[in-house]
Image (cartoon, rainbow, N blue to C red; front, side, top):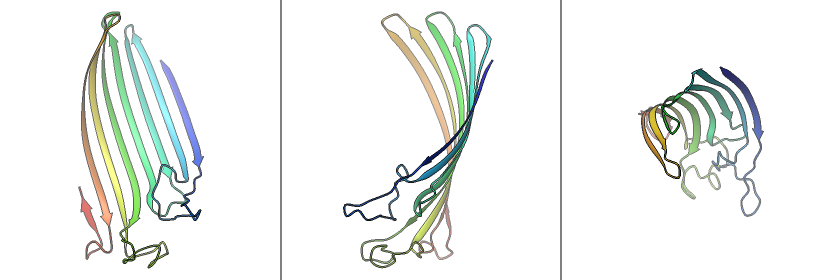
Length: 186
């Protein structure tokens, strides 16, 4: 049995600039935005008997985009995975795996067109607007798979099958969108 635990705390700081070097607060590039991340990861490797190996992983994470007013604001995720690998012979192995992923995130944006209602450059240069919308999404993925690996020396054969079942829900709120102010899409 081999166990490993790790904790990751990271901070990324970014800034958006246009060609005139003015900060653009309306950009939604979460891959470049300032972010604080906390993540805990547990790994387990079990060798109950030769030639069977069982491994598992659990990840609990949270990303907060601390300076973003729009785009992806936060992402919480939990991932659990279990994998078994069995060596049938020296050159043939079979594996089976299952993974469960749960993502819960919050996004904010604004519906606008140039010089129209909600235009942040000409009509509404503040963060608050009736043209803003929010979306809370929850995605749950169940992933099953199996594979057979055959090593024939200079030639190898990998046969794999994977099945994914996904369930998602988006809670979308837009004051301009519906008269009651809310809508839910699934």
